[in-house]
Each structure stands twice: as C-alpha cells, then as structure tokens.
Image (tube, rainbow, N blue to C red):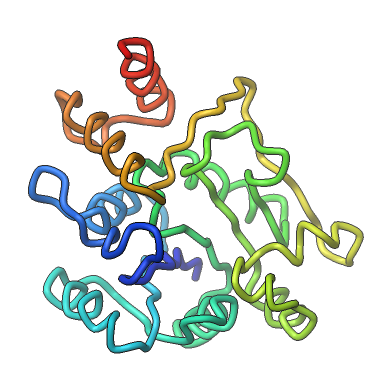
Length: 228
C-alpha cells in the first residue's frame, strides 16, 4: 500500500501551534487532510508527529477527528518518517509537510500513478523547483529509504529527503516532476505573514476549498499581491 505521511509538530519555532491554527473555524491540519482525502487511489493518510508531551494535543485532535496518526522522534524526522511507513506496511511513502495547506491532490494523484507505472524509486517536484513552495511532493519506496537512511547526515535526518538530492547517481531511479509555468510564490505556512496570506486566500474562495487546484490558488494569490 502507498501511504501519505504528513509530518508535523505543535511547537514550531517561528509560528507555534500553526498546525492547529484555525481559518474560518477549521484547522490547518483539517484543510490538509480534506485535500489529501480527495485523492482517488487506494492509500492511507497518517499524521506523523513527535513523541514529546507538547504534541499530545495533535494526538488528541487526531483521535477526535478519527485521523490515523503515528508518534516518533522529534529531532530525527527521517527516522519518524521511516518508522511510520514500516509500522503501517507502506510499500511507498509520500512525504507531505504539515505547513503545506494548499497541496494539490490532483498533482499528488498524478505523481503516484506515474511513480508506480514507471517503477520509480524516488520522485519529487522540489529540486530546481518550478512549483511554488508549499506545493511540494516527495515519493519514495520504503525499502530504498530503509537502505540509505544509515548514510544520512544530521541535516538529512532533519530534512528527510536531502540525501537523495545530493546523491542522484546512486542505484535508484530519480525523476523530478515539473510544470511549465514558474512561480516565485510561497504557500508554505512558516511565519505569521504566511498564515495571514493563507487566510486571505481562503476568504476569497466561493466554493469548497478542495475544488481549488494550484492554478486557482496562484491566481488568487496574484490578485491579492496586485492589490497591494
């Protein structure tokens, strides 16, 4: 089975509690989960947070919402990611950041299909990106990740996939999935101003947020930018 693993924690250094901050009565985590739930494939979504007491609130929220969750190392995020995949018997793991509110489920679905069809072992739209930040997708075979995690540096353990970007000549198939139109927009929610932008974008939506793809989000963000 392919598993989508959403990595998040509560005590973010720059915007504490951002994963459970609300926009129009709905948390960032719920927006992410709802968008991921639109993927029309046989997969699971697991929220992977740390085992620190400060993240008990995320576990409680997952229990309340009936979201599947996993708890592991705070600092060694790569270990948490892999252990989540192994525990849930995921053959392929899709890494999603907990600050990616505007992820595009159609893109993720397309990438998973291509990943399986072409028997890739690692797939990403991050390096040499043409996608806006905050619409990042990384897919890796669990066995491949398990094989190479022993070589990860401290930075790799924190950033999860950086080892594969530095070592494209290894014995795994490697592809980047890019789009034609470049964008310097940043939709990742890292700071307060990012949260304010996300709130402004959602407030302009006249339909359910899941009906808006990445182009819709870019158009709304550009409208806001041009009005300043």
